Image 1 (cartoon, one colour):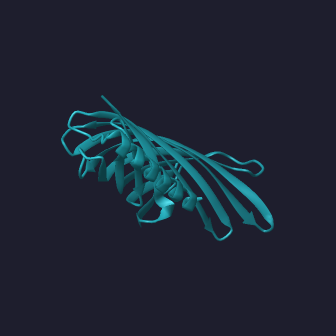
Image 2 (cartoon, helix red, strand yellow; image 1 turned 90 degrees about the horizontal axis):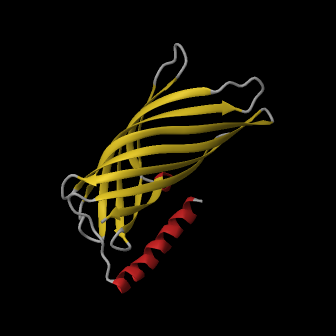
Image 3 (cartoon, helix red, strand yellow; image 1 turned 90 degrees about the vertical axis):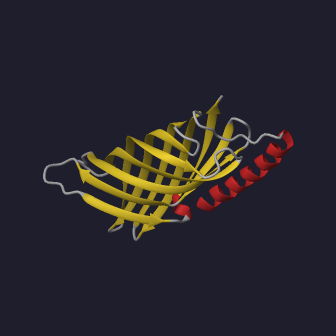
Length: 205
């Protein structure tokens, strides 16, 4: 699935490059620009007898406070399912996530059609988890996090751009919403295809 996403992204970038050259449109950002954007992400992992699939969608609004820096406010939505093989039986675990975050993105060449970017932000999410077993109860987890992620931005017209991020440096602190629960703190450095997010940006004129 991750390879298919990467191939599709390369194909889209190739086609849009041809169209952009034909139309002589380069796009680009400037101080004071406002844009709406959104990214989607999919991860698939297997740990022993546990398989997980997770999908995330993060719409956001951004505003350029300077020539190179844009502030963003983001809504975080996520859905996931895990299957666990235990003593010949398979149990499913469903989770849903809702939250929000604020951050900033630095564009190395914002006025150009193509630009590398680095984004950093903080976020809070609440995840509801339910296990498909008899007398199961819904668990709630609160998570605070900080992330730094490299990426790129490519305009296919004056107003529309494709964006992507690959990997991230992140720190999260999660805690179950039950009495006596302790926080789980995690630091992660990743730069692989399991951390790819693709999105589309619309710049308001």
